[in-house]
Image 1 (cartoon, rainbow, N blue to C red):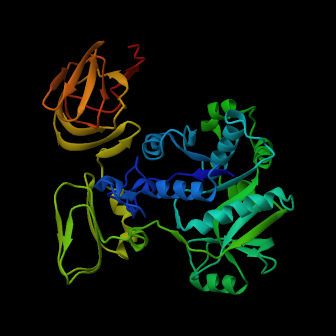
Image 2 (cartoon, rainbow, N blue to C red; image 1 turned 90 degrees about the vertical axis):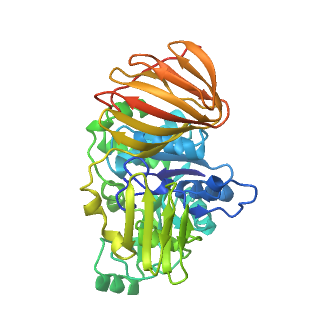
Image 3 (cartoon, rainbow, N blue to C red; image 1 turned 180 degrees about the vertical axis):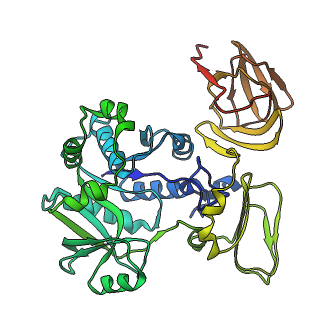
Length: 445
């Protein structure tokens, strides 16, 4: 099975655990089934890790490609390793260009035959393993050649106003699509459901050549490299508007299993097995309260009902669960830099911000290193607090361990390589500290 996972979105609705770099699919809140002999950090997994493992259980040989923006690549490599395929969008252009670019990546870079089926779905639904069995069935239906597109239609559990609807022509498991309906009011949604309508979860399968043929009708490009180079000139348009709503030879397969869109704190906490993640305590009079704390200080909740408390270096949220769905306009008003992020080599967290200085805690995974780089406008001081590694400063290499201090003047090329897990407190000093002040180099030694 070839599967493309659409990984997009920013971090507004699940602030403060998500931000413009770490979207909701990277937050580790789902308890693993097997937690024996694991550290606290390994007990929980993210949405993207959970989905990836579920795909591999359904089809060990599945070719998984994640279509995403450049600022999510480090998170993906950090959480899934470097074996997963990544189709990087140079800029955001909605789902049609993203799916076309991923399809060209599969055919031109991974050399997948255009005759093979591909399944496209969002990376962030909360589902069980039967969902991925259903994805395999979509691909098998495509191979029959009865339709150019086969959609997944999700059996509605309530008259939702959040989803579009697919109306099939029969009640069979596989049926022709009669029509589509936009997101309705609750009353109209009830009427659709009485007609046998299904939720449109944005999941479909087709042959790779179908996507590319439709793409060549709308976009002038030669191959993957050419498409990538001109990506910023493409029109932003969804796959539904560009392709699905114009296709006459289209089928839908029903899916009656569990399917949840965990887009708000209210819905996300419903899927959590533990009421407290991180340092948190609540007294016995608390009801339906969840604490998610990524800080190193404890959170105490007493006498609360239907509340979510979330804390990270970005900020602290204390909200009624229903009201938490409306936090985005307030978060949009906050003007602050990214306070934490996961990278392919590890992670960092901002500890203190002052005029002329920035203090961060850096954790590198064993065997990983930062890029070899320099800064024009700031000095840096590294204090090793845990682990072993080696630093390279202007070509000079030395081993480092807990207690060692490395001073790096502005303009010096530098990197650090972790032998074991390595934790460093980095103090940046300068009148102009910003992420743009960085130049990378090839490291020859």
